[in-house]
Image (cartoon, rainbow, N blue to C red; front, top):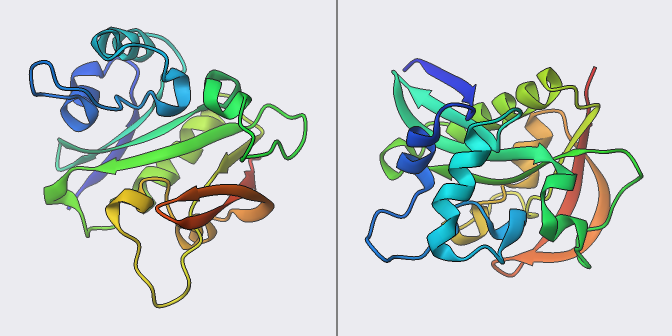
Length: 188
């Protein structure tokens, strides 16, 4: 299994394949929940098409043997309206951290460790784009427990720890009833 992770810049069609709503008239996140949930459903595809058309782009895409398999949203925290105004996820300091807010892995590619690949690719993309620090807001999952798909879209503390992140702050945020924390990694 050959896995590659690339920035979503110039790859809107692949972004759409993973995250886009395919049902005519259907609604969905379109990875807008943190960016700007005020954007109406019918305007979200064009908003994300525009994001994918310019640097640094809205995130990264994972490919397995050349086929798009997953998505990770990573961008400067300042590009996420919900994070800038959050009452539950605090700022750690005044640095412009890049934020990793969600992961999506297409069903047939799950269970292959792609979230680890996506996280590594997100970190590399942030570093290559000039970020000094990157952070995520994963759920706390006790050892031996599993996380459901609804809670897991933000990642787990174990996933982030395995990628060299450390807990930087508590939050009052939750996902699927699980506590979330701020985890950070300094970039060289």
